[in-house]
Length: 291
Image (cartoon, rainbow, N blue to C red; front, side):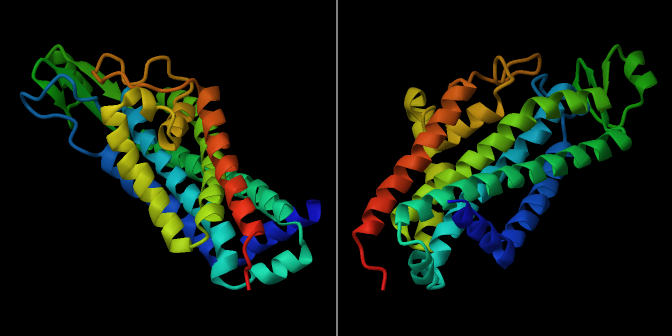
C-alpha cells in the first residue's frame, strides 16, 4: 500500500494540471478577496446592515472567498482518478497492482493529502492578503447615515461615528477560526472528487457534474429544503469551515441564520460521500473491462 501511495504522489507531482490548479486557487483568492475587501461598503444614506471595512466581520467576509478552494479540490480529486482513463495509463497501473481496491484506496489517500495542501496554500494566500490590508490600513466610519470610506478618524469622531480600521488582531482572530476547518474541508472535498471520478470515470462529465451539483443544485435544495440541504457535500464543507462560529451570519451588522451541521457532522458526511461513491465506482470498475 505504501508503494502505491508513493506512486500516486509521484504522478501528482509530475503532471502540469496539479500546478495549474494551485496557481488558479491563488489567483482566485486574490481576485475575489480584492473584490470583497474593496467593494463599496456603504454610501451617504446607506443601510446600517453594511459591514464596515476594517471590522472583524469584514475580515470574515474577505476570508469567506477562500472557500472556493473546495471546488478546485473536487477537480483535483476527479483528475487523480479519471486522468488514468483519459491518458490510457490505467492499464499499466492495474498491471502493477491488480487489486483495484488498493489502487483506489491509494488515490483516496493521495487526494486527501493533495486537498490538505491546496487548503493550506489558499489559507496562506489569504493570510498574506490580510497582512496587505492591514498594511494599507483599510478603514471606514459608521455614522447615522450609513458606512463611509475615506473618512479620517478625527472627522469620524466629530460626526459621532464609530471608526473601524483593519488590525492584526482582527486579521488573526478571524483567520485562525476559519483556517483549520477550511483546510480539512478541502482535503475531504478532494476525496469526494475521487468518489465522483471513480463512479463516472469520464473526466469532463465528472467535473461538470460535481461543479453543477455543488454550485446550482445544492443552492436550490438549500433554499427549498434547508434541513435536507445541510447534509449535502457543499453545506457539509461549510459546516467545517465555520466550525468556530457559534451563530453563522449573526452579529451587529445583520445576516440570517443558516442551517449547518456541527463540524464533526460535516466531516463525517463528506467522508461518507467520498468513500461511498468510490466504493460503488470500484465495484463497477472491478466488473468492467478497461482495455
